[in-house]
Length: 420
Image (tube, rainbow, N blue to C red):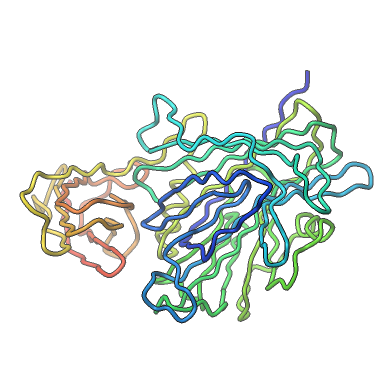
């Protein structure tokens, strides 16, 4: 009996995304699972692909939402003898390119009892490459996917487990990421992507026109022992062949800065290895959305604590929604009480409607100490508490700390004094 090969690859993706139009493939069952991430909605309606589907502005339309686009596609490259094949989730019907996966099973929502406190839901799906498409020759691959949706952090984790029906000399698993990021007015996507790569942290980040301080920043973080492999691509005028995709997977980039005015996309891949029937390869991807590199770094620390066997992130403060007669008229951050405080203080946040918010604590130098909350809340008044600890549970020293409430169009900061 073969020993299962487990190669866990965790990629953190810091993102904001929306789909312009649904892709249709007559060969697959479209049974979409919808997710919400930091107020943005998207869905998996094609096997091996993640697509945004609202907050989209049509050309010339400045009222229908934010102009975002994201497409990701699972690539599984295989080699047996001289035969090279890359089964891909890419889909673009205008050039007659369709995903080469078909659904075998799709569970729209799945409850795993008991769910860890940080996880809101887990869904499952299964698909294979046993599909009749022009130019596609099935290899005999099956993919089982689990998707973890988190309760407090803006994080989604996708776990892919690939099993072959026949022995393969080499298997490489990767994900293609294609983002179109908007200008500050949210009404156009000028294809002015900037990319930074931090190999020592196994990290890729992207911004529009180098807006790293206060913009939408997609990125990828790998948290496995696999070699960090990435390939940055420019704009593509035609679909890539299997041979070209294999070259992308096996010939990584070495540059760490990409600042040309172009429509970048990139592929992150695991190490190659042989697989036989009974073996499996597990590929894990975490998608996150933040607005600054600083909050991205904080999300990176949280993702590093994730363990699928014991899935629990660093715990955020659980807000308590207060009983009120009517919704507040405006968003606000009330002074914490007591102040100065020891051992803990209470913080009230008022929200006039449903919205995505961040409630963070910084030290006097502006360094992030504790993320009390980052996610969606319905309208109302909420009570939070802080006990003077950082994200790792360490006790902070006495001093002045800054409390910041932030939403898409609002930011308020106030001082707190912690006495030990």
